Image 1: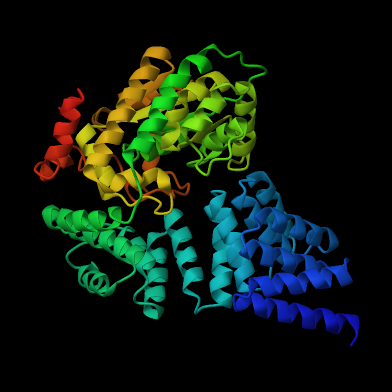
Image 2 (image 1 turned 180 degrees about the vertical axis):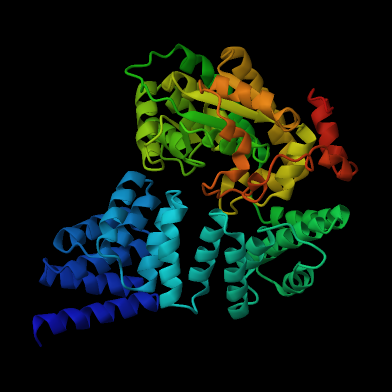
Length: 527
């Protein structure tokens, strides 16, 4: 057998082993091939894929890096980019994508992989052509169809997204992710809704994650049809069912808040060597309080672009702390970071954030709401950074968190499935903002959502002034901003300001009574 035929035979056998889930066997076969033919790029690549499937990500990266030095194959670069995102090497992932674009993969999985990496980097416009091609090459693959529909929705192409999802559901009527995304694309009407279909799908669903997604979708559509109490009943049942599966304890979040407060004096006194001169804008606050709205207002300014919700600051702090705990934020990490080089944290943050922005505008927004826990570090590590915190009626905040399905796999949002857990979390958030208000006077602009809605021009001027930006009329027309939105507020921020969600909690005052009582006992007044 000649070498070319041998290579094809070996590659085919190893790919077949990977396809049937025999990752150990595939890795062993690829390792033997590498030993016999160290210059065979495919051997290194398939060994890397096998290692990645077994969770050996760093080893997989080393193997595929060797493969691309031997053969700059588009498939190799695409998979390398995917692995880089798993270890948060976003800049390297962007470089690998650029290399893959020179000779894109010819298979559907390779194109879908490129689309997924672009999406993780926040470039949804670049992701879409790859998802489209993946669906063209493998039209029966529902995962590829879902990714295409999600990209369309992020880009504001709601009708196209709806058509894509209906096509997916024609192939897989039970697909809970598709049902959930479809329900959120637009406001449902008596003439155009999916309530009956969703009710049947939820009744038939057995997998906990499917029941969660379908429950949220059904509650959202019932609420759209002006039956908020029936919607809340579905939502409460859905959340209680999911909460029972979680190991969440508020005490763990409580300990993080305690550690941040205890470590602030150390951070406040630390010497900051060689701080970055960069001037990012941080939008922080509890989720669902208007952070995406303010992001859209600011990114409508000609000097500002949004990088979306970044994990760059949590990861920079974790790296500086050097802790080996499994969570990004925990008391051990907070204590270690308090004694770390704050200037290095700031520079690391800027380097991590760079791959999520074009770099063509003077100011970049990071709208990860949870950065309120890092305000002390941000203020010291990035002296030119601007910080804006969204505030909203506490009860509306609690209800909005309870009604929104956040990233299910993220432990950060586990508090959001129980009203008293949310109330407890809000109480500590409120106390933390009081600390920053006292310790860093004038550094954080606290913007009230309700005041912004009622006095758009005045509050927009206040916002721009705090950010050091000149007035721009385009900031009043934020709803015409064509930039992608990948948060739950995607549909809302493409509309002008509206008051529908103000004081919404009063529709459910009885159910929210215990949460209100909790806040009252902790000195938080409800208007």
